[in-house]
Length: 288
Ligand code: SF4
Image (cartoon, rainbow, N blue to C red; front, side):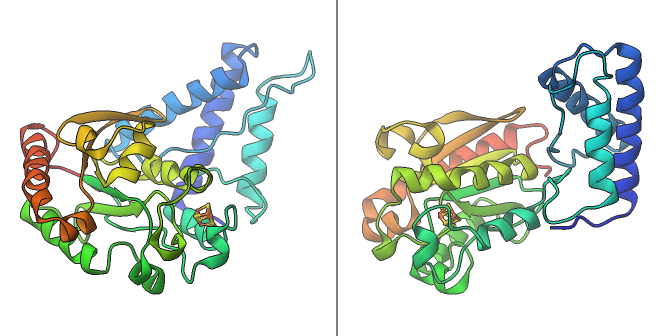
């Protein structure tokens, strides 16, 4: 997908220029991984000097394949200038975006769920969320609408979020582990979850939520890489590491489980209060 050109491109080019100059002065012996680390640090520094706005993780295109004797700075120069001059669908994006992810989801056939869906469901909500809510996958209503959590369980989720001052309209982003509906609402298979997980991680990198709320067993088990039951995972914060982030993650019961079993409502409410308390006590937690 072509990237819009404008002030952001100018800033990217300025960053590229600064990185090139710095690289030449610092020496040409850095590996691609080291250069990526330096570039990421410089981007964070520029963002924080500008207005403390972190504009998301960028894709860097350094290569170790530099013939001996040539400047190692040449590879990033060529890659970035070429992306800036001719941003085509084939070119690797310099900066990822939710729109690019959604486009990728809508055209994805990386697992069999892509053949049976009516609509893929990338996710929706605030662009700078305080909380990212992650479920397991779309159901029939979501598959029909192309939106997450819109059926009875979704309505209950909205009420649960509202009870602690959260909303997908203002401070939450809602997504699922798999973006296409498993037939008959079965659990998504491990290979389907694995195939889809990169989309979710890209969303987390861009959104940079302050907290993650896992709705249900599948989401919690997938993100925490465990087979432990939801009864053991809920009620305590874990930490999800994605890129340079360590996001506090709280698991609770899926709203559809609450609709089936009234007894789960009380522990789910305890989980929500725990999340609310963490947000309230966090000096920066209430600001997205
Ligand atoms: S579930 Fe995910 S990996 Fe599978 S087809 Fe849909 S978008 Fe692609």
